[in-house]
Image 1: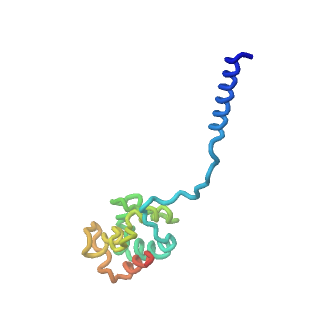
Image 2: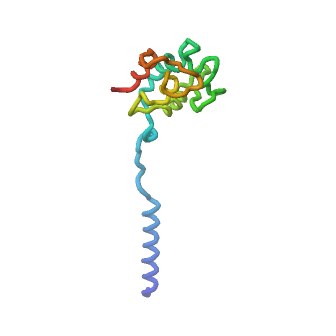
Image 3: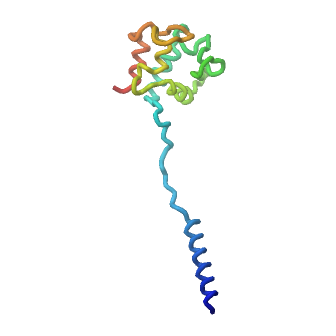
Length: 147
């Protein structure tokens, strides 16, 4: 066997080893669940279902409800980015995702979900829903954020 044949065999072996190395790849690493968006505010979901939805967003009193008969924030006919599912069964996972876009965890009292309906803070087409920060619904909202 001549020198060119040996060189050819070595080249073929080298190429085969490189292909084998690259085809084998790295082992798969499980990184766990996909983390929420960085900077996204995610207070307790169960508190949202038990307290925020029934007392702050959808209370029985229509004049204080974000989703009552006027449907201001109803998913089907709402007039803003805060569009919430109101058809039974309520899609709490979807609504929670929508609501968290309007929160500021570092300064909860600056959350748009609160500043819009709170009297004297920010213009709200639905008017002032909560007359003061002492309102029970506002206190419930504040309780949503760990101290």
